[in-house]
Amino acid sequence: MSHPVHSHSNAPLVDLCAEVPTLLTSVRNAWATWQEAASNAHLAAVMGYTLPRLGVDHSNPELTLDSDPDYQKAKKNATTQDNPRDVHALHLSVCDHIRWLTKESGSGLVRDIKAVTGIDVLDEAAAEAAAQAAEAEFERVEGFLKAKIAEIERESKSLYDQIRPGMSIKRKEVIATYDKQQSFILECATDLAFTDQAEKDVTKRIQELKSGWVARGKEAREFFQSKRYTKLLSERKNIKGERVHSELSLQSYFDHHAHGASRTESAKADKKALRLADKLTEGGSGFKQIQLIDMYCLSRGNEAWAIIPDLIRIGHDVDPIECIHYKPPTLDNTPPQIKPYRDEQNRAFAKQLLNLCDPGLRAKLLARHQFGVNKVESKVSESDGCGLYWTLLQLYHPLSRQHRRTLERELYAFPSKFATGDPNATLTKMLRKHQEALDVALEAKVG
Image 1 (cartoon, rainbow, N blue to C red):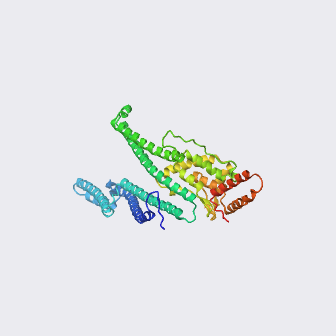
Image 2: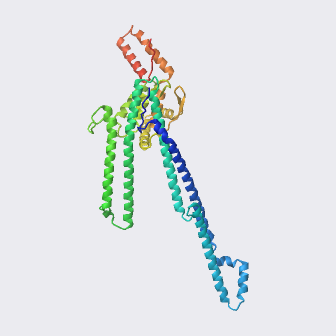
Image 3: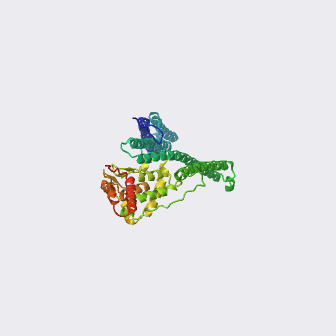
């Protein structure tokens, strides 16, 4: 049976992989172009400095001729002739010839270098600009390749999650919801990045226009009445309107959609403050912390849309074999369109979370740990909010095999407890343990 492949880019995995060889070739070519341009810039820097200096000593040949004993001897012998003025005229001609010869030698050398390498060594600025442009192009192509590799990694993980044997229906639903959310925010983030760049371009153009206005000595107040400025102002207004539309789409999706409300601005969600579960560090409250984060996310579509999918999946995607929560991607593995927004929102969430911690808990979250059956080593940054939340759950939402077996034994013991005492109280305790077993994806044996 074949399985469909879903991607945030809507491209099959095989197509994504097929693009890599071409991208690798582009990266190699860009690197070679950059290295050649850098070498040319170095040559221009050296020769552009050296060549003019070669002619300096000969710009006034009389200084060197005065120190030439052979020339001075010949000049002295010539002076004994009938007309000394002829000797002086000859001397001036010699100086002129030396100047011409020096100039022609330097120009010839510059022409030969340009003919062989294509470089104008006297134009150091142009060579340096070409090197910088080549470096920027290399970084652009390399960044695109890295983004494509990260996309392949995400797609491979998504495919693996879909076809993994024995995965519970609940976990499949969590992963499917995550993929759907990621696809939506990628589309919106692309629109936001486009409007952000457009706004930067307009702002830059206004600054250039303003600088030129001042340089021409015009009155400042007239600037704001000029047609160029009002046109740019209109452009910026339209750009901001498009950005607001994208932001409202994200807010509507994560807030109103999550609540099942109509997609209107009047349907406002109640914001729940971020807080830690009571007695979290004492154990047994990890599931409550997941609920608190879920409630926090419901009303944060405008300020945390880039990290909400990760926060939700961290709490509800549990690997019962590895005994580990879903670990969110690092910033390097984030699509470039989402990266700047995720970085900013992730930092803000990290700051809020750490502010709730006492010094002991803060130190523990930032320490190095080993989690899961395979002892996966982890040390998260204090600016990685999703990573800190993941570490918090790994520490205080028990997933170890020992804990799972203990929970399983407790569930098996409940039937005998109904024989004595208050059955309602026993039922309440059993339901609580049953829900805890569901939260950690415990597969209890039947029979």
